[in-house]
Image 1: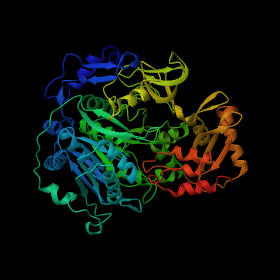
Image 2 (image 1 turned 135 degrees about the horizontal axis):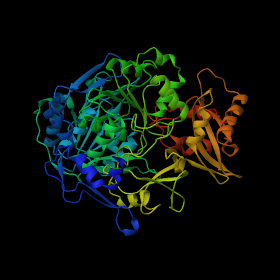
Image 3 (image 1 turned 120 degrees about the vertical axis):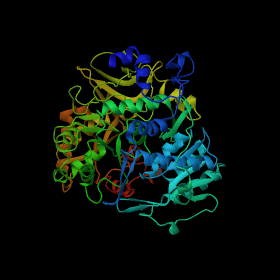
Image 4 (image 1 turned 180 degrees about the vertical axis):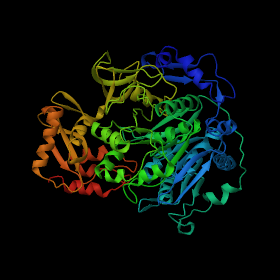
Length: 631
């Protein structure tokens, strides 16, 4: 299949696309691309001229094939015992009601809708409702600050903002509506006025009467949506019509609006989900990601539903009310495919095996990892302890920009190596290039690029095609540059070494931060590590490591030396950290992503330049790190 996908991409992807419903088939040319900035404007098109709708393919098509009464979503609330579920029939009815309301308030094909919701069922419902009427959804992770939300509102000018009044995350209440109010005020001051703020009453977190309200603009979801019909005509769109905008942080500080279109993204997410997880119709699938990130778009909502899967959507925190919550949920719903981030794996690993072993987990069949390279010790723990050494791990490498998996194991298809993303997915042609952009063959390391397009590729950055070309296609003309470093071993396996801007150049040696972190975490007393580069008067850059120890282990100079020795022994003396900074915790977003920008500022003592810390799960961690800077 892989050979055919790269030698006959038109035939390969046409056959797969034909399994979906198209109102009109695409033209003669299946795809059109220009990857070379020297030959003109960068352009990617797949299935152009084909008319379809992704919501129809997620819901109506499955119902017509007899899956109407199959559970589409199991929803698990923050508090154990707070749960509900929805069949494909029920989901379609709810989506249609919201779609009809959006049309009624003036949302048309091509208009933007910003969605700022926690992991309630209303989040995928809102995404699908927008897609049904051809509107462009822009989901903003409900952990972003008012300032970040306002930036996104100003950029995409939505007709409607959808939110809820508040959410419980663990034992904490987050007042989302107040954040939205501030963002709408800030964007209005910049001349962008949003007329409708549709607000869902999340009564387990906050009652209606406690919510601040702007008459005329704010509308309660429960007051209006249920009055609308449960059927809604589909807006048929071209394969190249926009589906969604998702903002990803840019190096300049201004978020980049990654634009994905409908047809190619639909075909690619469905196919990657099906093969990378070896999906079977009887599977219960749980991806722990939030829909505010690309993982939640492709592998909570679209990929699974296009395959008629049953998905678990979890609103709460994975360690609440205790660190066994994930396995409690796995046993409760008989989850067979579990997809999560290395950060969660490491934080659970830190708490000890007994929180895992007291649960059955017998239903698990396939495990998955996403978001960053998983270090081998965490991979082994995930495999041996969580999966009882019987579940293959799909260690997926991909990006917001790629739409779906690019390099990933296919479970059971080939031997795995802990920490390697293994081989490319169908249609993906990765290459490793040197500084001059020359392809390197065989065993090597360098910059990871992709030659030739794939259906799920993003088409542009919203309103800034020039930045799109400069950021992704100018460094190595003729290729898409991922921004990641990568090595390929003698067996052809790919190993991601982290962002190239997370590569430290020490005395001429290029050292991936992920490599040093992996070595540190292999130390039995180290639970987690985050490494950044700092200026060094002799080496150019030095290695600065923030280290979180296993519960109950005291800080000591001997331990510090022991950690440095582990790195020296595993990588070499040149990679030894210049500084070990004790870290009771690391600054993370609520999705578990480490905010390395903040760590770099602390490491270089630029404490007045820390920037916005409101998106952190626990902002007090920053003060603890500053206090421990000289310990």
